[in-house]
Image 1 (cartoon, rainbow, N blue to C red):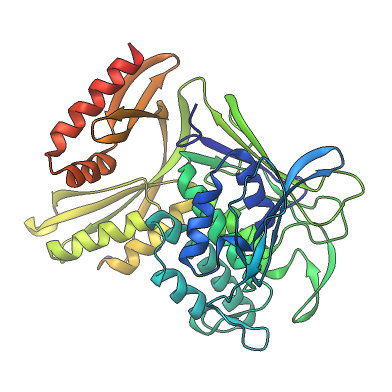
Image 2 (tube, rainbow, N blue to C red):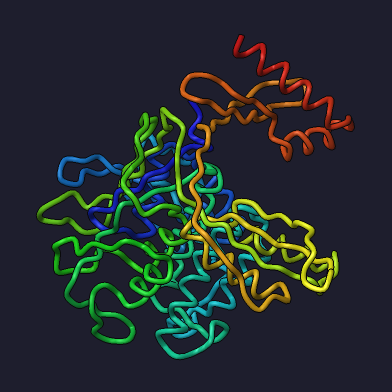
Length: 420
């Protein structure tokens, strides 16, 4: 059964870090080449990854290390959990006396030949870190210089995790809470309290749920916090459902009272899912059609579930439009910010709604035009709808020089043959 398009649940009882998250996703079954291609695209080289299976207080987990000077010679097999053979290679991003400029990292990501989803996720993670750093240090996002967060291993962790999540394309992601720890830590700025200020600010801004964790040490790093903030759609316990796959990622330290691991579970619900969402609206009477289209694209880019325009008549008989968007609680504020930034409105209104959605799945079928994806919606065991994935069909149609409708028909015929 495919892992893609399902629900992900993250268990962070021992905290979260970039290497723990990426290790868990590899253990889950994300193909190594998906991650390696992304690292090659940013100039890091897939050979920076050293993958081993280790025991953390009796739990077998993927331990991930990043070599700052190495490039892959032989392709890795995650199931073997052997150290990858390495050879020297440079990295395009260079530190300036231990400082990594956010602008350079962002430029590298924008210019790299990454998938659209990988680039968007990686930029989202680094943007959250940059905003937190800017606020903490009283500067602007453009002037932010990373210290530990900007190191090469963190860049590899972020881009690798973004690529893995892009491949999984989860329908939703939940996390009950993340253990933060307490006490103090040493950083480039000296002794700081735990939770790390940047990690705390990132999660605060995203509405993340934090737990102490009961240990006098840093459990959640700023990179781990930013990955959670950019990924989790619901800070709740795991929903009722059937577990399909489980991945474990190992942390560096050995903790005295628990395995230092992060767990990711892929599941599919057994029944229709009910959830709360927000409807956000604004009345607008002074924007051109071109600007309206651009505004809708910007709102979608901030994570809106849907965006639409409705014609209305305002006071004095003036024709106008209502811009409406649906968003999860996690994305409500970014969506509101996009509407206020991209339109001429001076305010928005929003209300919380309940919705029930069918269980969604993706089934791959073989056709004369290649492998195509079918989106399947189910109510329990009953299939209510099956539709080809448009973007994949459109790309196949362009490649073979045929109308999209023929690819659609072939996809549905192959699905019918597969399921009958």
